[in-house]
Amino acid sequence: MANVKKESGSSLGGMFSGIVIVACILVGVLVWSFIMGAGSNFEGGVNTGAPLKGNYLAMVYKGGPIVPVLMGLLLMVVVFSIERYFVITKATGKGNLDQFMKSVQSSVTKGDIEGALAACDKQQGSVANAIRSALVKYQEVKKEGFNSEEAAETIHKEIEEATALEMPMLEQHMTIISTLVSLGTLAGLLGTVTGMIKAFAGLAGGGGADSAELANGISEALINTATGISTSALAIIMYNYFTSKIDTLTYSIDEAATTIVNTYRHFRGSLKQ
Image (cartoon, rainbow, N blue to C red; front, side, top):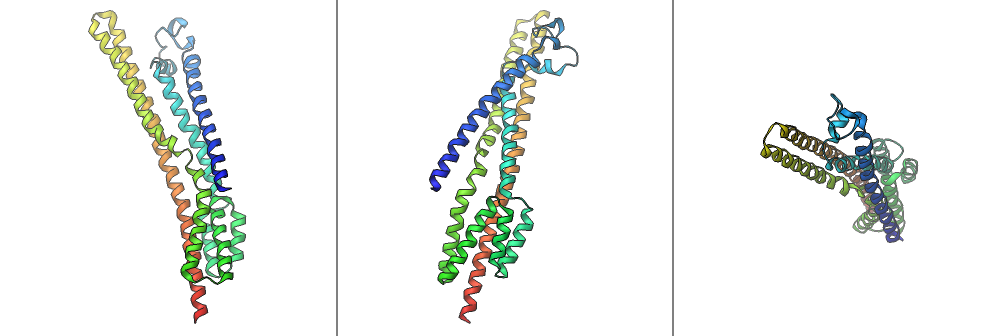
């Protein structure tokens, strides 16, 4: 059942990723062609003319055919970042995570397992679900009278299985965001190289007529460089932010599991006295 759930989620996630990637590239091409390349942005009313003074849309359009690809990559970073934000926020639960953890740990330490379960039901989310599974297993091993080591192994195994079901969805599109860090840089570099090739071709031709070609080549190179750096910078920031949030959630689950196990050991120790 768990494997079916994971495979179904993976399939839907892959479909969503494919649709987003294609849509972002398509939007990038459309924006570059019809908005940035609109004739009203250029002298003479056609996009083959020089950009109007101060018209940045036209300047970016002159960055060449790599620009729409870079725009698509930048849009992917934005879309996947928004999607990850909502997923991780949902996994955190309805209330403040720190307050929830303090409430659960306090209830478990006092032996109020029902109170801890009620807090999990109220909080909801992946963290609360994983902790709830451990609390239910705690009640089971307590009834069966397991010794401390058997109980610790059983509770840890239960929370590992619960985490394996809840946490993978949090990292589902993190690989894409991390890949966009490199793709943004490489695509920007490709645009830079093609722009410099045009610039040096104009320089090699010599003559005043080719000075415009030289300037256009350098401009294309710099536009692609700036767009590629912006894409990579945003991807790095978002990847590190979401990785930190996921680590916090994982740590919270491990911390709760340790509290539950220690409480059971204390319970078994009090029976022997």
